[in-house]
Amino acid sequence: MNINNPHPLAYSIKDACSASSLGRTTLYSHIAAGRLKAIRVGGRTLIPAESLHTLLSGEAAE
Image 1: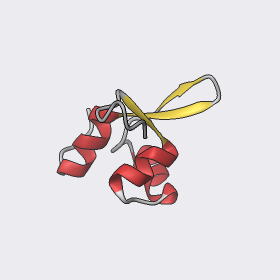
Image 2 (image 1 turned 180 degrees about the horizontal axis):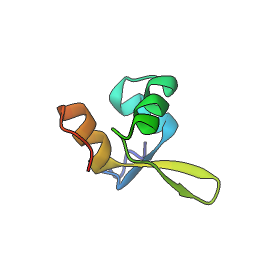
Image 3 (image 1 turned 90 degrees about the horizontal axis):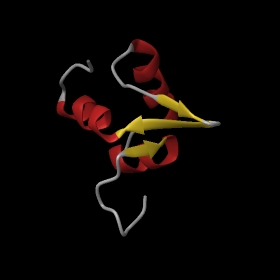
């Protein structure tokens, strides 16, 4: 995560794991189940920050 921007728009899988204390497998399971949104940009998978916050707050993803 970029220290200069404490509120990123999206997280890489690695940064989402670090920010949430969840593992890669858990994140990918939530993506597959539709509880966590993921977008592909080029070859990268990004997790929108809002989606990660929604998951961690216990609300359902839209």
